[in-house]
Length: 102
Image 1 (cartoon, rainbow, N blue to C red):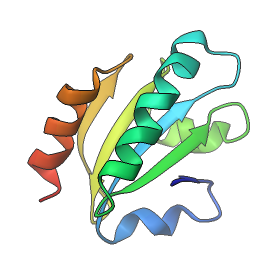
Image 2: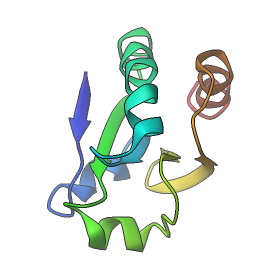
Image 3: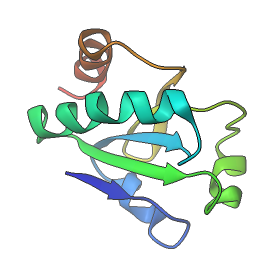
Image 4: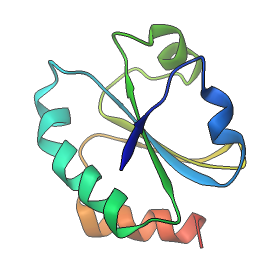
């Protein structure tokens, strides 16, 4: 299950391993990538999957230096370990997440 991340609940990324998808409803590549992201969320229950709507959470997107979408951030205990820009292939993304979130 993918959870909504906002500036109000940002503390949720401070413990454990998570991935954040910065996206927008009008973004074609974001919409195309959404089923891949949701499938990985189900396959990897040890990782928390978040989604940030950059239009609704402009401050949060700016704080994370998001300039293009989709942008993914792999975070462990509040520290960004890797940033990925653009649509990712499922197997490649899963491998990168597993590298950081064992």
